[in-house]
Length: 407
Image 1 (cartoon, rainbow, N blue to C red):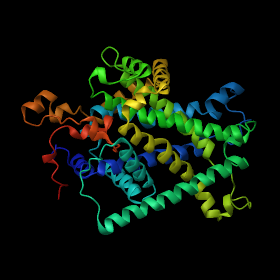
Image 2: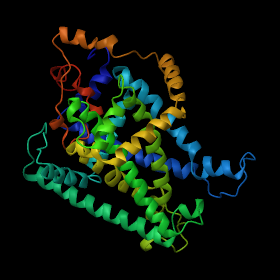
Image 3: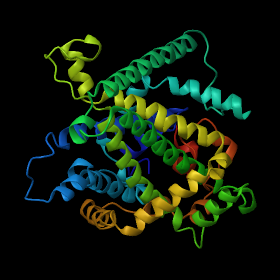
Image 4: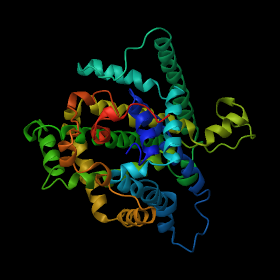
C-alpha cells in the first residue's frame, strides 16, 4: 500500500519505528481522557433543579446528573463507531492527514514528559516479574539518559501536585460532585474516587491480560477457580464473548471516566479568592478544564494497570474481580445500549467508501503464500508495553516495507 495509500504509509513508517507505538499509545491515552474531561465540563448540568424538556426528576438524574445520555453518546459516536471500522479497514482509515496530525500530537504529548513517571512503573514491574523489557531501541546513554530520567522526575512532581489538588478540593467540597450530588459527604466522594479509579484500572488491565493469555494453551490460561471460570466464559464457543467484553468494557470505562471527571473536576470560580492553593486566576482556569484529573487517571488508573497486566496476566485472570467485571461487561453488551454503533459504522463505511484490509494486502493465506506471513508475538514480548495484546496489528506483513517515510 506504499503507493496506493501514501498517508497510511507515512503513519505506519513513523509509528512502527523503534518504540514509537508505545509513545503514541501513552500520549493518546492522555488525549482521550482530557477530551472526556472537557466534554464533561461542556455537557454536565450546572443546576440539577432546572427543567429539561419536562422530564421527571428520576430521568434527569440518570441521563443528566449521572450522565447516561452523555456516556452513550460519547461511547457510540466518539469511540465504538470508528473502532468498528478501523479494526477491519485500518489501511483506508488512517490514509489521511488528520490521522498523521493526531499521531504527531500524541507523540508530542508523550515527549513533553507529563506521563513519564509511567516508565518508572514500567521498570519496577519488569524487575518484580523478573521479565526483561524487550525494546526496539538501543539503551539510553549520556544526554538521552539524563533527559529521560529528568522528565521522569518532572512527571512525578506534576502527579504529586495533581493529587494534592484533587484531595484538597474533595475534602473542601470544591468539586463538581457538590453540584451534582450536594447531599453526598466529602468522605464518600473520596471513597468513590478510589473505587472508580480501581474499576477503570481493572478494565484497562483486563483488556491487556485477555489478549495476552489468548496466545497460551487452554490449560495454562487460569491457575485458580476464578481464573478458570473467567477463561471458560471469555473463550466460550467460537470466542464471541471476547469482542462482546470489549464493547461492554468500553461502555463501563467511559461511564467511569465521566464519574471520575465529576469527582476530580473543580467547582472554583477564578477571581473570587478561593483558588486552590492560592494559585493565579489563569492557572485556576487551566485546572478547571480537568488537566489534573486527566493526568491522575491516565497514569494511576490506566497506564499503570495496563503495564501490570502485561507483566502479570495470569494474576489478573485469577482475581475474582476480573470475573465479576467480565460478567457485568457482557451484560451491558447484551442490553444493546451500544448496538447503534454497528449501524452507524456501516453508514460511515459506505459514505466514505473504505474497504477491508484484505482488498489491499490479501488474506492471511495469501500473505503467507507471498512470503509476508503475519508475525506472532510471545507473551514475554508484551511485558512493559502498551502495544501488547490487542495492539498487535503492526505485525501484519513485513517490516521490510517500512523503510522510512516517503521523501
